[in-house]
Image (cartoon, rainbow, N blue to C red; front, side, top):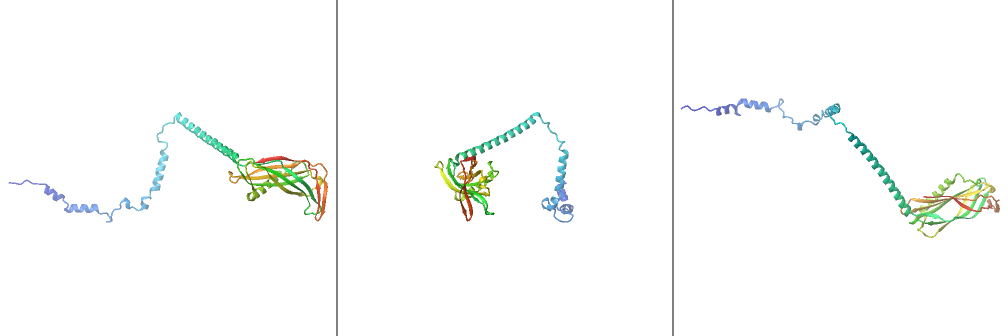
Length: 295
């Protein structure tokens, strides 16, 4: 009896793993030309990975610029333009509303501060015992001088205490009746003195307290003027103070005063010899406030 032929054993022997041809093929596939291990992408040197990156970016950007206008687009409708214009006007209205609100806020803050801060004013000012002195012989100290006492009543009519209250005063004499050009400079000097002095030794005025009288002896001198040529005396008075809610900001009440024109003749009162000084009195009939300011 003849047994049937089977091909499985023969095929297994021909294609099995132990055949010399199969082993040779596996060796040729697994081995590299240099017999070194294969380099995976993760093992590539960093400079080799990025050496083409700048050129690739430039090439991509150039492609974008060349084909930007070729891309299909929808034509803008009139509603799109209207939306843009409407948005623009809404932005302008919002900006204008913000400006108005900021201005209202500033006005409200200033109004509140004005209602709660101190306000120092003055009553009727008196100038007492004016005496004129002339130093005629000394070429270095030759001058004309006026001595007087000024009485300034002050009162706090505000809602909070006034701190660092002080007064400064500067004056001059003129041959003309019109106001001298140094009036503003005189006030700056008076306020400067009051500011410096008030920060260290200023007084305190409480709201609605009685008048406080500041009485100052004053000596004002100018280069030598003949006594019969003095026609007016000018005084700059500056009251300085601060409030508790103003962060030590200084406020000022400013008064410019002048005597009425002097028309009478001077009268010699007495004289001294060492040094030689001649004392005169002039017929000053009245003093008046010619200008006021407050901040």
